[in-house]
Image (cartoon, rainbow, N blue to C red):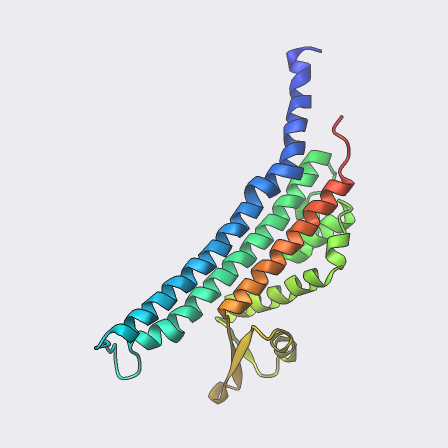
Amino acid sequence: MTKTQREPEIQKIIDYEYTYHFFFNHGLFDELFHFEELISETNAFLTSKLKSFEDSKEIEMIDDRFGKTMQYEAVFPTILWKSIFLSVYFLTEKSLEQICKNLGNLNQYSLSVKDISGSGIYRSSTYLKKVCGISECFETEIWNNIIDFNKIRNVLAHSDGTFSNENKAIFKVCDKYGELDYYEITEENESGISISKSFTEFALKRIQEFFNLMCNEMNEKKPSVT
């Protein structure tokens, strides 16, 4: 076999190892671990700032409503936990689509994920089940959690966390998770979602568990590289 003839085989082995090993173990799982560290460091920062205010004799007032303590107790955590949750969700959505592309390219499927109707996690899950034969991880309660995270993400991304009080589906999702808070905005007949540290940690843990399940299933079903 000549060098030219060997090159496609070598590239296939590289793509194979990337799809089933490196993408997860030297990419996605590292990124998810960084979010663990970010949550821990963010909480430590907020806690240390509040402690410093307790030790201070004078606390600067921003205006008649907010002082530094209020900012670090309520305002900043609300912004930070929402941002981290959304970032973890976007990583989930992006990673699912990339896994579709990895498997599609490696196996030279006639259909790509872009040929599937829908969008986001729903399109990727359809492609993985119907085209790639990866289905068991989608038949779990963990995947149902991620579908719920999608609903929360949509409210946060499209209406900055507010939703109509007629939206019973969102209330049902909020009531399902003790870590997820919501509050009523009476004058607008709306409610708002407040993302907490505990819900952010819960979402990250479930997403880590889901991708572990997917990685294991893919490796159990992977073809031999010949």
